[in-house]
Image (cartoon, rainbow, N blue to C red; front, side, top):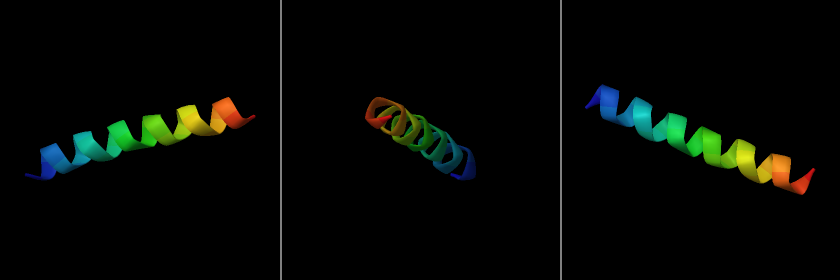
Length: 24
């Protein structure tokens, strides 16, 4: 369960970073 949550968090983090880079 913890591993699954960590993977989801990492995926969300990458998506957020991609959006921020797109705005910049």
